[in-house]
Amino acid sequence: MSSVAIGLFAGLLLALVAAVGGLSMFLLALVLAAAGAVVGLAVDGRLDLTGVVAGRRRG
Image (cartoon, rainbow, N blue to C red; front, side, top):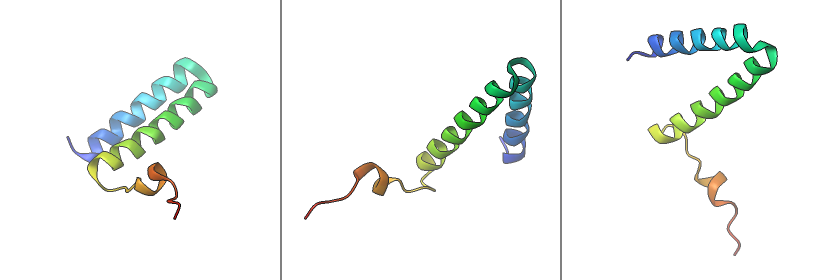
């Protein structure tokens, strides 16, 4: 599936959430979409989260 199709589907889904749930549900959907994007980037290997997950090393 192309990036354009995925973006179109995500936009339609967010519009549906806004129409059904109102502003608060729309904002929650945006936050969850951003979290999903971060997870997807990490799984693809385009985002390195080892510094966040591992924390600081103590020497």
